Length: 197
Image (cartoon, rainbow, N blue to C red; front, side):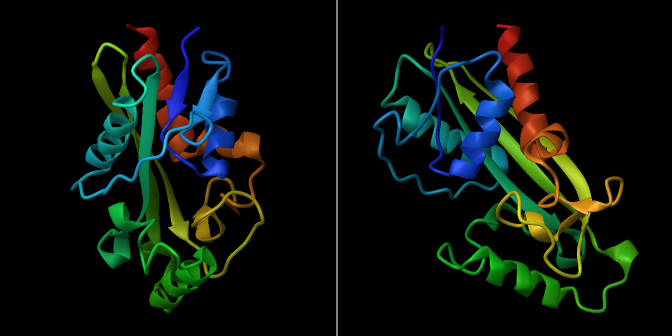
């Protein structure tokens, strides 16, 4: 059984990751659980570059495990795809998402429904014990809502409305979200790629 270390400390992400990968990889550890402490400067120009930076840094300390990392972001078309790869650092990393979400809603004030298009994008990188590397990318399309709705999820979920579902991603159950989310899709893509090896 291969061990997977996922380069994150985000508990919300770890729940999603375990739920989706558990049937293939029963042992999935966060960096903290694996006893790995490292700071990675995410200065890549793409989600893939940032994800690989994190995965490589952790893989250098955990040579027997498959190391995965993700980088994801919210792209708002009307705002020239901001905040994009800077989503976590938008308005400062220590700024609460309630404030970040309120800021995005206010910047979209008066923007008509058809121009509120946005997407969540997720790239996942894997570094294998033999040094091989791979990346996958997936997205979910939606719109920016007019107010926060829902108590689930995290980050920008309360303002990301999915028209086909009639809900924000924060209003979905964990199971529903894992089926449609950018991270859920990317994790399943990565699972398929790893099965081919």
